[in-house]
Every structure is written in C-alpha cells, then in structure tokens.
Length: 463
Image 1: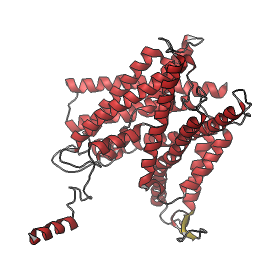
Image 2 (image 1 turned 60 degrees about the vertical axis):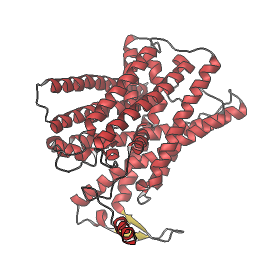
Image 3 (image 1 turned 180 degrees about the horizontal axis):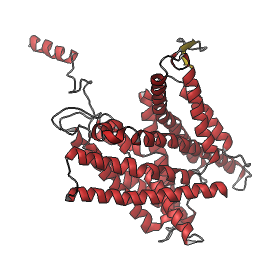
Image 4 (image 1 turned 135 degrees about the vertical axis):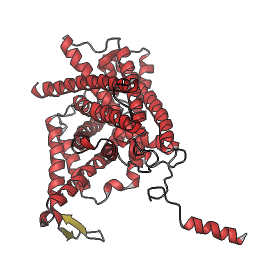
C-alpha cells in the first residue's frame, strides 16, 4: 500500500507533458466558452442599438442573425486548422498567424500581418474615442443629476479626455509584462459583461416604462436614398465589428485538453458561445431600439438616452473605461513586441535599439530597464493613436471602418482557404464551390460596409 502511495507521488512530481512538450493543457468546454465571450463582447456591443435603428426591425434582426451564422461558419472552419494538415503529425498552430504560415505559406509573408496589425492599431484608436465619450458621459450625468436636465455642462469637448487617456496609456506602455498579467483578462471579462448587461437592463426597463415598443420596419428615415444606403452600410460595419473572434480562436483552442480532440470541444464551445452572444446582442440591440426608436444613440450608455439612475450609468461607463484601459494594452503590446523584434533584427549593432539603461524608480526596489528605441516607438505609437482619435472622433463610423476592414480577409477568406488546404478540397468540386460562393457573398457585404463607413468618416470630417 505504501509502495503504491509512493508511486503516485512520483507521478505527481513529474507531470506528463503534452505531445508538443508544453505543460499539460487543462482547458475544457466551459473555460473555452468563457474565453470566447471575453474575446467577443467588447465596446462593439454599445453600437448595436444604433445599428438596429438604421436597419429597422426586420433588417436589424436579420443582419444580426446572419452575422451570427457567418461567425459560426468561420469559427467552424478555423477550428479544424489547429493541427497541421496531416492529422497524424502532431504539429499544432498556436496562433492565427501560425496557421496561415502552415497552410498558406505564399500569403503568410505580407497579407495577414499587415491586416492584423492594422486592425489592432485601429482598435486602439476606437478605444481612445470610446473612453473619451464615456468619461464625458460620467461628468455630464453627474451635472444633469445635480443641476437638472437643462444644466449647461460646458462645451467640454472630448479632446481633453482623449489626451488624458493617451497620457495614461503612455505610462502603462512602459510597465514591464503588463499584458501577460493573468488578472487583466479576468477584469476585462467581468467589466465587459457588466456594462453590456447594464445596457440590456436599462433598455428593457425603459421599454417597459414607455409602455410601447418604438421603432419602425424601415428604420431611421434619411433625406435621400443615397444617404440611407450609406447609413445601412455603416450599421453593417458596426455589427461586423461586434461579432467575430476569429483572431483569438486558435489561442483559445490551444488551452484545451485532449482527449476528446481539441476541435470537438471547440465546435461545442463555438455553438454555445455564438448562441449566447446572439441572444445577448439581440437583447441589447432590440431593447435599445424598442426604448428609443429612431433616436437610438450611437453609443448606448454615453448618448444620454438614459438619465437615471445616474450612479448606474456612471458605474457602467467606469467599467467601460477600465476595460478599455487594459484592452488597449493587450492589443498594443503585440505591436510593441513585433516592433522590438523587427528593429533588433534590422539593427543588431545599434546601441539605440539594443542597449538597456538601468534607471532607479523611487519607491520600487528593482531598477527599471530603459531602452531608447522602446521609449521613442511607444511614445510615437500612443501619440499617433491619440492624434487620429482627435482628428476622427466618430464612434460609429470608425467602428464600421474597422469591422469591415478585417471582416472579409481575416474572418472569411483566409479561414476558407486554410480549410480547403487542410481538408484537401480540390477546386471545382461541390464543397469548394459552396465555400467560394460563401466567401464571395461576404466579400460583397464587407466591401459595401467599408465604402459606406469611409464615406461616413469623410462626410463628418468635411462637414
């Protein structure tokens, strides 16, 4: 008996490694679901009721369901690309970029990295705009509460808050290993869920209080048909921004334990997550539209459709700000790492790039390792995202541009191509034709949304 106990202790001391030599993965269906929800629900949820308002009751609902379907198909195709094409060989693709390198070597060099980093950069601009709107909303909600609805809240533009957010991000950019702190994603998940739920609850409460369901079949009327078409395109771009989680899907799949095969667990996770997200998004979008009708604000929690309870609005907006403070870093750090690697490879002998200076920080035991290239690049990066946000502070249009920009290339085209390679689907067969048709339709939708959103940004800028 004692011998048996000793044996099990020995096993515990040397845990079995996974087939790629990594520590054993422990993820299951529920951690997978939690990760996806964290990846999906972000500040895109705030624009949904505005999107439904532009599309009307029928169009808005149908558009959301279509995007849910497309997101599911995309995730289904991509989850098969976690293992390399030969299923017997045990090579894993840990990230989206790894999968593209394995399956589509000819494209991997330039297309995805450019699009992916452009998307991360654009999202940082969107986060700067959103944070400023939310901080201003907190200030206004308090002054409306204290001085009544007609309170002159000063014409305090969002510029001050954008600069404030930029300054905060500049400081956070120099915190070592900030993005790998485990609590960051937990906090982000709780925050995003909290403000999305508050938005849903307030919309529901307001609809009940009104006693009628507002809105129309055709959505917000515009002065000319052309304007209506552009508006619809922006709304589609906004929904495209809110849904897909393709870029993080393989990272999530890489946390799952097997057996059962990771792709099986991921399929189930995809179904549950897409159903839950759609239910949630339809709730936020439709209750928001039911509450405000054609006057639905661009940003549900900062557009002053709601005035009371003011403390709840303050809390929701504070949650958004906290979520975006961390989110900005999670995205930016990927670009910083990429820039550090590239500059070290290009200038191996440069002291500016490779030399670290030890700087004493008062109140911190260890000295800070300062690198001049990092200081310059990160400062320029944060300054440029803040500058662009100041130039184009248009929440819905900027989200639309971003959503449309990544939608076809990263969410549809590459997963379809990789799946064809993975499954050995030969051209001009029925399966191939179906996938290419799906891709073509999505290309048309994505291009339409992109053109409309760019038109919106330009018109607002010139107007």
